[in-house]
Length: 365
Image (tube, rainbow, N blue to C red; front, side):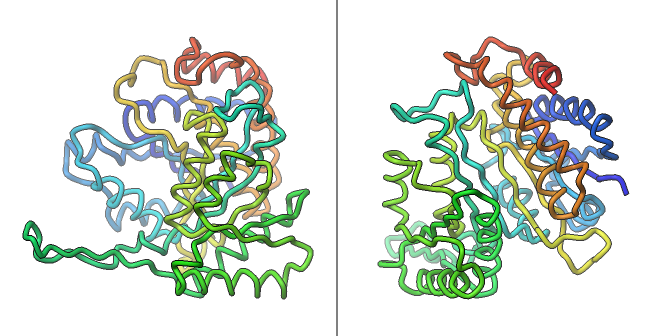
């Protein structure tokens, strides 16, 4: 069967970077014998401002007919914060059961890091963030608003089921990496209930099923310091949702910034022929829609193209699709071949046009 990809270009520069990534996909598909079908969807700020529509059950049903979702970026200054974040991005994560957030953190040749004397050998790890529990569940509320007695609560949720499936996925990733090292990041000395669930599950699963993997634990505040001072100590990180949201952006910063950061929101058990398996995984570059440069062919599509590589390799791995895996690796190698041309340049003001960078990748293929 064809690999079916739903694209959601979104808003602003999201449209431009997805267009260029699809050019790369078209260029790699034939030589890799990859049968792929792409269907665009218009979810995002533009549609919301025109119609008031964000995402409903009928939309989700259509998305479930695909193997993966490829998102550009959503957002517009005229849309209040939270509308698209909760109504589109978080709705997809929860309704499609995208319970893993996968964030590779790797410094590429030619990309500048703010960390002095750190090289491509020092910054190379992968972060697995639990993606559907924790403070993001929305449990809690607010009462007596705008009075001196106002009170608001937001509950941290950790279920053994949700924690365990994220931890097992992380151990499986750690098995594939040469160092076979995994670090749990939490705050067990203060968050003694949720932290205890995570800590016990991590050690029990590791000891019983993955004795060949070295296990370590770091408090999240210590992790933030280590990411800046000695990122080379990390190989595979497993972390709950809220803390993961923070440290993955820190990881992106030390690897060159949002302009090169790829991410995947995964449902590793999805099968579009099985209605009980949730929904497809969603992949996105983590940068925003940059309305100030939208439509000017100035956006850098490297993060979107690298995200496409992640999409193909992960979906290929989940589906045992060798052509997708090979195509994803080929795109990754092309990105690595092109990034040295950014030596001494900033990603967002490199002097290269959006379509020029995509052409550079296609030539490198």
